[in-house]
Image (cartoon, rainbow, N blue to C red):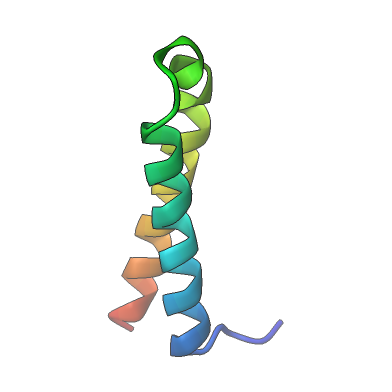
Length: 54
């Protein structure tokens, strides 16, 4: 499988941040339901950031 380009990584990082912010801004009644999803997004974000240093 091909590695992601820096531009592709930047796009994914921006999308992940937008999605995390969207979840953060959800109505309090459902925000807790999305917390695991938000945590998973954050883990993916960190993995991508780690690859930027390579």
